[in-house]
Structures are given as structure tokens and as C-alpha cells.
Amino acid sequence: MSRDKSLVIDGVRQFFGPKNSRVQALSRTDLAIEPGQFVCLAGPSGCGKTTLLRLIAGFIKPSEGQITVSGSEIFGPGPDRGVVFQSPTLYPWMDVASNVELGLKFQGVSKDQRRADSERYLQMVGLTDFAHRRTYELSGGMQQRCQIARVLASDPEFILMDEPFGALDALTRERLQNELLDIWRKTGKTILFITHSVDEAVFLGARVLVMSPRPGRIVFDEPAIFSNPGEVIAAEEIRSLPAFLELRERVRNAIQHSH
Amino acid sequence: MVIPLEGLEYHPSGGPDDRHGGQAAVSKSAPLWVRVRKNFWTTRLTALAAFLVVWWFLTTPWAWNGDKPIMLPLYLPSIPSVWNAFIRANTIHPIAEGVDREVVGEYGYYLWQHLLATLQRIGIGLFFAIVVGLPLGLLMASVKIISVSIEPYINFLRSLPPLGYIGLLIVWFGIDNTSKIWLLFLAAFPPITIATIAGVSGIKEDQIHAAQSLGASRLQVVSSVTVPAIAPDLITGIRVALGFAWTTVVAAELNNGIPGIGGLAYLSGTELKTPLTITCIIVIGVTAIALDSIIKAMERVLTPWRGKA
Ligand SMILES: Nc1ncnc2c1ncn2[C@@H]1O[C@H](COP(=O)(O)OP(=O)(O)O)[C@@H](O)[C@H]1O
Ligand SMILES: [Mg+2]
Image (cartoon, chains in turn purple, yellow):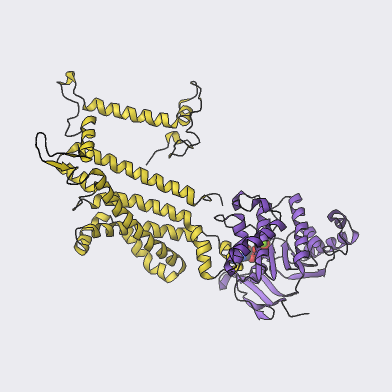
């Protein structure tokens, strides 16, 4: 395993609440994510998926253990770990393009360069025509696309996504899944994708993790190949492959039997 | 200020651009409240006309009343006498009927100069209230020890009627403008600070997180997220502060308040120049409504996302 740019979660446990009535959200978790991997984490709601993501993002400090990126411990949020939130956190006082450019602005990139970059990423997510709209004028799916473009534009090593398509209708979700795979293949980013949908996890992940109900623990960890086909296969075909159905079944069992 | 008619969901500011303000044809058989809603300006103007008719009725001499008006002019001056007082206050005129000496407006200033003097005091007081109240609010919202130590004093100050301590301010800062501006400042900054604190506590945690994950420094979080996020609350706070400052400034001008529209209202009353007093009251009220409309318009222009995200 290359240490370079890999993310290592080492003996992390997480508790919430005051000492005498604390709740364990995450039991001991060890996990290494290698560069370029598309990792999907599935699990029932309330099992601690978001908690794990927030720990990696640096929004909260682990009660025990440590998280390292390229061998050095993380302290707080940073631009190397971009976050796509479950409910879009776009800024309504900026238009879509300014939202996408924000990370570059924080880095001090010149205005012209920012414009060029945001145009590129808006095109990648299909929002070119909406560049100068306000974010609240976008549909839910477009807001998630905008969040993805915003994260891509600031060029992080890792993209952490928390059920980004959970609130979307089935058709939009499938479109965005395919777009996300395209983006992953183009950019080679390391992605941690959280979902409560078994189908989504198996379809997207190059590696599928399952977390048990609270206190969360990783109980299943297997590679998947469906996001990585040698030749391009239509999504419907992939979903009807026996191997796809078989893995999906095993993931579902893992979730059910972890109770 | 403006009471919504029938509790219907129209915006009291109304105006020609108002959704319900158009002169859409409304059937005569429609219920009264529907007609009221559809004919915003017609209703307002009719109400004003009715008000003026009552005023005229009360102040006109009637033969059946022994050629006297129902209300004596000292209590309620007639419409023409108020109009004359308004004209006099805006022109150079003889000091009295048949006297050669001419004077400017009232007490040496035109009416607009009185108004302007008051507006200037408000402007300066409000300016300092924002300059101090906003950063103080930001500081109190982010540093616990500061908010714990300062909050009681702000609530204390807020509970005091400004007139209660104007005397003290006069002793400290003299009877001229400085004490009045201090009074306005002290009256106006608590609402701004409190609105800022409320705004900061209303910011969604993930909006801060998102910026930090995009690489924002502490200062960049403040300038790109905190300040715009609290803008709607801040403008509301400024609006409250302005209303408060306006009622306070008029009272503050009871002492040495010339030029000043409040001082003029007070002084003219003590000298039984009732038409002039009523002129002043009308000017004070209309100006207050105009200022409030300006802030509401700014609200729409500066924070178009209010209530949408
Ligand atoms: N800030 C917090 N304070 C207290 N309890 C929390 C907090 N965040 C999460 N939890 C608890 O931890 C558990 C896991 O939550 P979460 O990570 O959001 O689950 P998931 O994302 O898998 O639905 C839940 O029982 C939740 O109530
Ligand atoms: Mg969650």
C-alpha cells in the first residue's frame, strides 16, 4: 500500500453527549483508502456514516484514535478533503458560478483563471446555462451538481460525499450516478461515497463497505468491478449482470445480518 | 405602523408594483374585502379623503353652531391654517401682519433645514451604531467570555427610556449636538448588536464547514459566509434601530433643539402655534414612513435571497 496521499483511519471511536450519558456513534474503526479509489459506504440510517465522514472532513475530532492523510494527522477541515453535503450548502448570496469559484478565490487564484475553471466544471456537470442564476433557483439535482462542481474546482485529493443523491427522484439519481462515474474516470479523484442504497453502493463503488447499526462498525469490505468496466457497458446492462446481482445480494445480507 | 386590512395577505407597503395594487377590473358584486384588496390605492386615497372631510367638518365655522367651528382653532386648527403654517415655515415672510421686518421660515430656519438637521443627527448616530454594533455583535457571537460579560449591560441599556439619561449626557457632552448624537447612538446600537447575534446563531453549521473545506481562512469565513449570511437580520436590526432613533431624536430635541423638527414641534406647541405643531407632526410622520420604505427597498435589493434559502 502506498502511503502517499492515502487516507488512514486508525483505531477511531466516536462518542457524543456528556460523559455520564454518552452515546457511542462509532465503535473502533480501522480503514485505509488508497488514492484514486471509489469507495462506497452503505449502511442503515443512524449507523454512523455521517459521523465517519465528518471525522474525515475534520468537522469533529475523534474521541479516540487518529486519522491521517499521507501519514500526517489531520487537524480540522482542509481543502485537500472536499465535501458534498447531504443537503446542498450552496450560498444563496452568490450566483452559481461564484459558488463554484469560491475555493479558488480562497486560494487567491486570479479572477480570469477562476472564470475559466468554473466554466469548465460547470460544463462537466451540465450547468453552463445556469452559471448566473441564484442557487435557490436550481432544482435539487442541479444543486447537487453545483456542489460537485464547486468541490471539483477547488481540486481536492479526496471527495467526501454524504448521500448526495438520496433526496432525488430515481431517474435523476441514475443520471447523476453515471455523470459521477464519468467525472471520476476523468479526474481520478479519491471518492468516499456514502449511501443507504445497496444498489447505488454496488453500482458505483470500486470497493464496497458496509457499516453495522449503531455503534457503527465496518462489517463488510469487498472490491466491486462494475464502475470499472474494461469497455463501456450501459448502466441497465450492468445492473442485470449476474455478478452484480450476486454482490448486491451479499451486501444486502451483510446489512441485514449485522443487526 | 400600517395595519393590514382584513388580515389579508397583501404587503402593507403596497405601491403601484404591488401584486394586488393594479387596477384590475373587479366585479361590483364581489365582497367588500375583495374590492379593498384589488384597489389598493383607491382605498387608501378614499380613506385619506374621508379623514380630510372629517377634519374640515370639525374646523369650519357653522351657522348652526353660532358661526363657530366645532373644535376651536387652538385645539384643532383648520386645514388652510395648517397649510399657511407650512408655507410660512418654508418662506421668508413678515414677522407679523403689517410689520415690515422679514424673517426666514421659523426660528431662523426653513422647515427643510429643521428636518435636515434632525436627519443629520440620525444619520451620524446610526452610522456609529452600525460601526460599533455590528463588530460588537460579531465578537459577542464568537467569543463566549465577551458575550457573557457584556450582554447584561446591553439589556440594561436597552431597557432604559433614552429620555431618562439625556440629562446625564447633557452634563457629560454639553447641550449641543454631541449629547443628542450620543443619545441616538446609545438608542440605536443595541438592536443592531442583538440582530447581529441572532443572525450569527442562525447560520447553518455546514455553511461554515463548507467554506472551511474549500480552504477558507478564519477571516475568509467571516467575509464570505458570516457577513452575507447575517445581512438579512442586520438590515432588520438597522430598520428597528432607525425607527427607535427617530422617535428618540424628536424627544432629544426638547432641549436646545433648534434647528430640528422635533425641537420645532415642541417649541411651537409651548407657544400655542398649533398649526405649526400639526405641520411638524405631519412632516415627522411622513418622513418616518419614507425612511422605513427606503430600508425596505434596500432589503429587497441587497438581500434578494431572504426567505428563499
Ligand atoms: N452531534 C451529535 N450529537 C449527538 N449524537 C449524535 C451527533 N451526531 C450524530 N449523533 C448520533 O450518532 C448516530 C449516528 O449518526 P449519523 O452518523 O448521522 O448516522 P447516519 O449518517 O448513518 O444516518 C445517531 O444515533 C445520531 O443520533
Ligand atoms: Mg447521514
